Image (cartoon, rainbow, N blue to C red):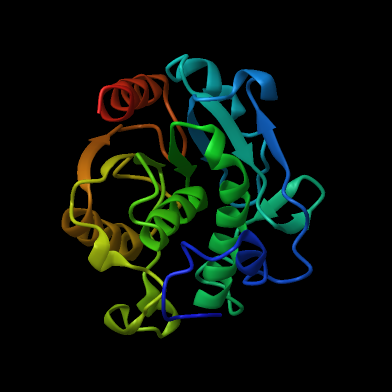
Length: 240
């Protein structure tokens, strides 16, 4: 994978070449027909590990009505109906190359659809939050906002790539102005403390953070949290 330079202006075909040839065609669910999407803000949903594109679509009725909502399927199939963006970070086959490939996979799809929309916001749950934050780290100026639910940001050093030497993420271009919502339960049983600590350091340095904790929800999403996400989207994207 390429660790140097920025592929923002590269043709979509060149970006597609950055993810493995065995990755499938993109599969997405939409909340409205194509003819009704022009000029609307786009909210992209990124599901968690072992799930699929249908999982988060239940959130669509609860975000501001102005948004077109699309939920994208991760490229790696684990079992029928179960997908991952990249291997779990604790797995032996986890690499930052896998994170890069998944990110380029999503960006290639986004580059095909973003032109019809007034802005793009990404929302990820669990591993989907790792993807959402990776997308904005790769394209710091392409997104209106980012929402992370019960998840984390990827620490390159976990795969032996010192963050200061890892050129794929353009963290230096994130100047603290990108609005981000991060919701979680402090007792989340799935996201390990090392991931939380790294993410806390990263958000404090690079985004304009709204952080809310929801005791008792575990590794899930609650109705109060979604109400807060709706308010965040209204304030940061629609009125931003």
